[in-house]
Image (cartoon, rainbow, N blue to C red; front, side, top):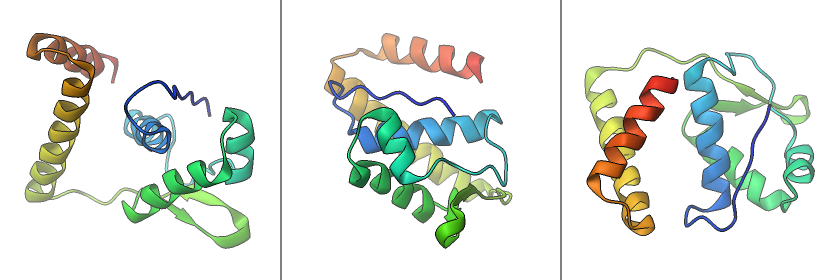
Length: 123
Protein backbone atom coordinates (compact mmCIF):
# COMPACT_ATOMS: atom_id res chain seq x y z
CA UNK A 1 0.00 0.00 0.00
CA UNK A 2 1.52 3.29 -1.08
CA UNK A 3 0.56 6.40 0.87
CA UNK A 4 2.11 9.82 0.98
CA UNK A 5 1.46 12.81 3.20
CA UNK A 6 2.28 16.47 2.87
CA UNK A 7 2.51 18.29 6.22
CA UNK A 8 2.41 21.66 4.43
CA UNK A 9 -1.18 21.14 3.28
CA UNK A 10 -3.99 22.66 5.35
CA UNK A 11 -5.60 19.20 5.64
CA UNK A 12 -4.39 17.37 8.77
CA UNK A 13 -2.02 14.47 8.08
CA UNK A 14 -4.37 11.93 9.69
CA UNK A 15 -7.13 13.12 7.31
CA UNK A 16 -4.75 12.74 4.36
CA UNK A 17 -4.13 9.13 5.39
CA UNK A 18 -7.84 8.46 5.96
CA UNK A 19 -8.77 10.00 2.62
CA UNK A 20 -6.18 8.05 0.67
CA UNK A 21 -7.27 4.74 2.19
CA UNK A 22 -10.92 5.52 1.47
CA UNK A 23 -10.03 6.38 -2.14
CA UNK A 24 -8.06 3.14 -2.55
CA UNK A 25 -11.03 1.18 -1.27
CA UNK A 26 -13.41 3.06 -3.59
CA UNK A 27 -11.10 2.40 -6.55
CA UNK A 28 -10.88 -1.30 -5.71
CA UNK A 29 -7.15 -1.16 -4.93
CA UNK A 30 -7.93 -2.35 -1.40
CA UNK A 31 -10.67 -4.95 -1.35
CA UNK A 32 -12.68 -6.49 1.47
CA UNK A 33 -10.45 -8.46 3.82
CA UNK A 34 -7.28 -6.63 2.79
CA UNK A 35 -4.99 -6.31 5.82
CA UNK A 36 -3.68 -2.79 6.43
CA UNK A 37 -0.17 -2.16 7.73
CA UNK A 38 0.11 -1.96 11.49
CA UNK A 39 -0.07 1.50 13.00
CA UNK A 40 3.57 1.23 14.01
CA UNK A 41 4.72 0.11 10.55
CA UNK A 42 2.78 2.81 8.69
CA UNK A 43 4.06 5.46 11.11
CA UNK A 44 7.65 4.34 10.46
CA UNK A 45 7.08 4.19 6.68
CA UNK A 46 5.65 7.73 6.61
CA UNK A 47 7.95 9.19 9.29
CA UNK A 48 5.03 10.08 11.54
CA UNK A 49 4.06 9.68 15.16
CA UNK A 50 2.07 6.51 15.90
CA UNK A 51 -0.73 8.66 17.31
CA UNK A 52 -1.25 10.34 13.93
CA UNK A 53 -1.73 7.02 12.16
CA UNK A 54 -3.83 5.71 15.06
CA UNK A 55 -6.16 8.70 14.66
CA UNK A 56 -6.62 7.92 10.95
CA UNK A 57 -7.39 4.27 11.74
CA UNK A 58 -9.82 5.30 14.50
CA UNK A 59 -11.72 7.49 12.03
CA UNK A 60 -11.76 4.74 9.42
CA UNK A 61 -13.10 2.31 12.00
CA UNK A 62 -15.77 4.73 13.22
CA UNK A 63 -16.80 5.25 9.58
CA UNK A 64 -17.20 1.48 9.24
CA UNK A 65 -14.50 1.26 6.56
CA UNK A 66 -12.09 -0.96 8.49
CA UNK A 67 -12.26 -3.21 11.51
CA UNK A 68 -9.49 -3.95 13.95
CA UNK A 69 -9.24 -7.47 15.28
CA UNK A 70 -6.83 -6.98 18.15
CA UNK A 71 -3.39 -8.40 17.44
CA UNK A 72 -4.54 -9.82 14.11
CA UNK A 73 -4.56 -6.32 12.65
CA UNK A 74 -6.87 -3.95 10.79
CA UNK A 75 -8.81 -5.09 7.75
CA UNK A 76 -11.00 -3.52 5.06
CA UNK A 77 -14.62 -4.50 5.70
CA UNK A 78 -17.18 -5.67 3.19
CA UNK A 79 -19.10 -2.58 2.12
CA UNK A 80 -22.86 -2.94 2.59
CA UNK A 81 -25.22 -1.42 0.01
CA UNK A 82 -25.84 2.29 0.61
CA UNK A 83 -29.37 3.72 0.61
CA UNK A 84 -30.17 6.75 -1.54
CA UNK A 85 -30.65 8.90 1.57
CA UNK A 86 -27.31 7.82 3.05
CA UNK A 87 -25.60 8.38 -0.31
CA UNK A 88 -27.04 11.91 -0.48
CA UNK A 89 -25.85 12.65 3.06
CA UNK A 90 -22.35 11.29 2.39
CA UNK A 91 -22.08 13.24 -0.87
CA UNK A 92 -23.19 16.44 0.86
CA UNK A 93 -20.56 15.96 3.56
CA UNK A 94 -17.85 15.21 0.98
CA UNK A 95 -18.87 18.28 -1.02
CA UNK A 96 -18.66 20.47 2.08
CA UNK A 97 -15.22 19.08 2.87
CA UNK A 98 -14.08 19.77 -0.70
CA UNK A 99 -15.39 23.34 -0.53
CA UNK A 100 -13.64 23.98 2.80
CA UNK A 101 -10.34 22.64 1.45
CA UNK A 102 -10.69 24.58 -1.81
CA UNK A 103 -11.41 27.83 0.03
CA UNK A 104 -8.47 27.27 2.36
CA UNK A 105 -6.27 26.83 -0.71
CA UNK A 106 -7.76 29.90 -2.39
CA UNK A 107 -9.12 27.90 -5.34
CA UNK A 108 -12.02 29.16 -7.40
CA UNK A 109 -15.05 27.15 -8.51
CA UNK A 110 -13.63 26.44 -11.97
CA UNK A 111 -10.46 24.95 -10.43
CA UNK A 112 -12.57 22.80 -8.14
CA UNK A 113 -14.69 21.56 -11.04
CA UNK A 114 -11.57 20.69 -13.06
CA UNK A 115 -10.07 18.84 -10.08
CA UNK A 116 -13.34 16.97 -9.50
CA UNK A 117 -13.64 16.04 -13.18
CA UNK A 118 -10.05 14.83 -13.20
CA UNK A 119 -10.54 12.73 -10.07
CA UNK A 120 -13.79 11.31 -11.47
CA UNK A 121 -11.99 10.22 -14.63
CA UNK A 122 -9.16 8.56 -12.66
CA UNK A 123 -11.63 6.47 -10.69
